[in-house]
Image 1 (spheres, rainbow, N blue to C red):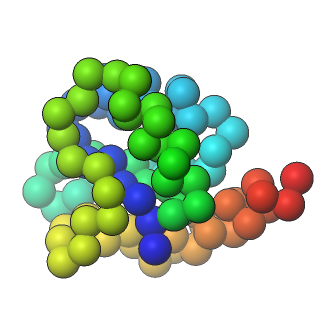
Image 2: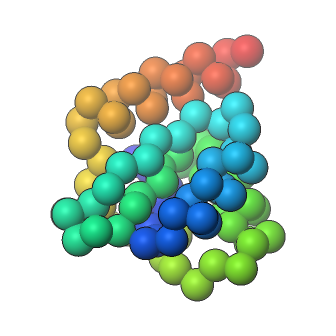
Length: 89
């Protein structure tokens, strides 16, 4: 599972990506035109903390039953592998 930030605002995505720093994340464009930034559940608190510090009115969370925001399998595999390495450090 993963935590997701969903918005059409590329500026917000860039702010969050910069603030995440070394925290593994992936970004992709959903079928409805939104940009989705995803972290694994164990890094979800870092994402929530960053989003709470910026002016954001979009959606953040697990977003179940939203097939348009399903992380493509290859990106999820990459994210999981990078998250595993990140926690071992």
